[in-house]
Length: 212
Image 1 (cartoon, rainbow, N blue to C red):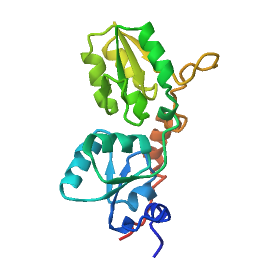
Image 2: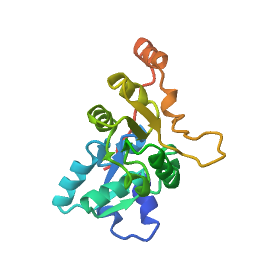
Image 3: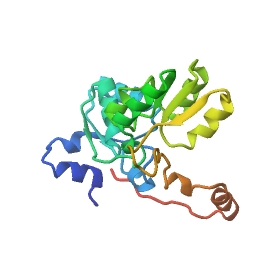
């Protein structure tokens, strides 16, 4: 039987109990990774699921995002080993630049996705999933909303709250050509035409084999 790649990689660091741990992976993983995992979560259910598993005495491996994993550990106290991965968008948010933005726009709320580094999360008024951040933007009484996640979310936020001013959290400092580069190239590969092509042609089926 083929080695479970996630457990094998963590085991290579000399952690002997790795095969006794359950594997929890984020939804933003390949179908093959999901097929060899015990649990698949979105950011909205990560904390309650880990709280449940921890209450059962389970020890865990988390993949792939270390920042989201750290947020879950900070929130739940779970015994969880983290895969050393990160989102290329959320990892780039800069704490110093965000503090400068807050000084410039004091009448603002900061909305942060938990895939962001801990130092960014600590500056947030709301931390949560895409849905939670959209709801927070609607409920906010502030004029300015600073958003630290993929910029595609701004369309929906502006639609619900056209009277508010939405600002992208900064990813670079002074002199950079892109003050905020919060655009995921992988998410933007998913376009309406490609989705229609799948429905019409009934192709692109993914077949995976799970591991016991």
